[in-house]
Image (cartoon, rainbow, N blue to C red):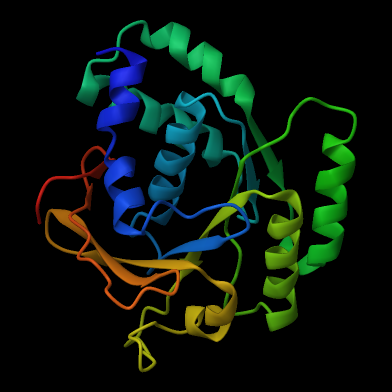
Length: 236
């Protein structure tokens, strides 16, 4: 399969249609799940789709061990190659990886305004202008409302979109009236799209909890394959 065909047939197109055209510039999306349920895999698959489309991606990690992020990109790309029989895979990988930038911060040691300032100084006078910002390891349970407001203001100013991962409590989930779990629901006013990952025996189900201001939430005909860790558009 050629790269153009892969992009057209990607399950990310299904996701975009289900959330009414995609996340969009200036908006914040969240993949929420308990620890170890596939949030990072989802983020990396979304990022890889952007890279295949020729766009640039900035991946910011607040994880304790950020070294594994690069391996996630290799693993997801390799699984995409196998699943879609991508032609000239090595050439495509060498083409897209320079379009991805990884940065690491320790959330407890830095405030969000400083993170944004460091990003801007790092990118200043470079041709690297991302259209997508990925943030993993951000601790929603410790974050303040003002911090999410700063993220929202930042992506609106830069005219980019941002996907977060959010870890849910292992105990019984505390849901609000819209079925949005804590601690994500505290930041609902700043979030445009919320997707919860529900683990089953041999797959992980996608549950759409918010899609911009739409009331008619669609059932996401998507799942995360627990073997390949790829988003799939097969029925669940």
